[in-house]
Length: 421
Ligand SMILES: [Zn+2]
Image (tube, rainbow, N blue to C red; front, side, top):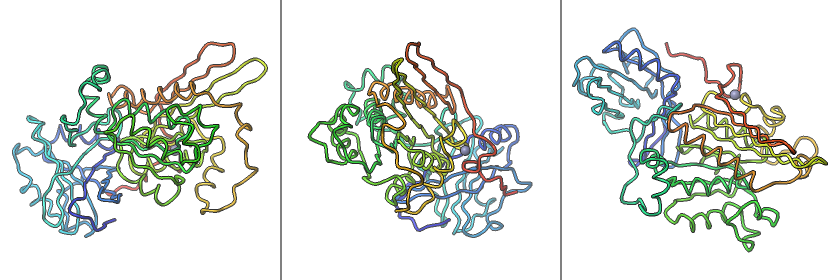
């Protein structure tokens, strides 16, 4: 869909790795063929996400005149002419003025001379960032964080451990956290300490006395404030250079939805209900954003205390319903689809119905696992991953972790199988 955009709008291209990889192999073997895909356009507030789900190689040179006037499209080509300019390519492609066309011009011998531009109303301008969504989260284009803003002394230990490339990547990253209870607040302080560039918070709850022990860093006299406001204030004291945006409303509210559609590098759900977890997961799929979901549980009985944590790092093409699952997917989906103010299904649950209590060190451990999974994804060491921690009473800690894929039969997260060709 096309929409009116301002001069200062930034454009962020994301391509599914499953579409990119096979096409890149073909382009490396055959010069002058074009890989083409339709762009889905999402966004608001001066930031546009341009999303490419599928690519194919047409039999002939693609031509904008033969495509719908308002269709946004994407083309990759490796010209045999080597230095063939973008002007020549555009002569071949003939985009209509009303179309947004993004062109990636590869250069086999001089990869640094690859060009990524967008063309709209005859004007050629650079795309602000381009990422291949999947293992390694390859970034083809993007402005590096300014070295002048780096507090060298403060970040020296973290930068030493992560290496400059990964630390720079984090400094240029935006993370959105949904659910700012025990796990969410731990997650925020961990991410802030690692040096991420921007943080967005969504939660409607008020800070209560029973929350304080699980949210280190928040003072007792903040009780009665919203959790996100209290967190934002104290995170700002911890990292004065960290821009924080927060929404004191439920994840399904309009303002939260707008914020969730803005480009970010990681969506985190640390929520206590499956409807919100599923909502974030589906938004992550829609916007081609990695999704980290963290859940914890403490059970105490006559034999002692058992700790459980589930940490899922998911990529587009999978969701919390088909990887690991939800306790009651139908109820979660009903809750998500129900209009605001609808009655909840079943009896309301007291906090103690499903768990014996909460332990701050379990929250901290689960979030630490989650953060490390994200770092390993960025390093290209792992793809989507499900880590489970089980520490039963009177037994040793048991860790099970595995790379995961979505279910092709999942009606919630699978991309449309519709092809352009
Ligand atoms: Zn799914």
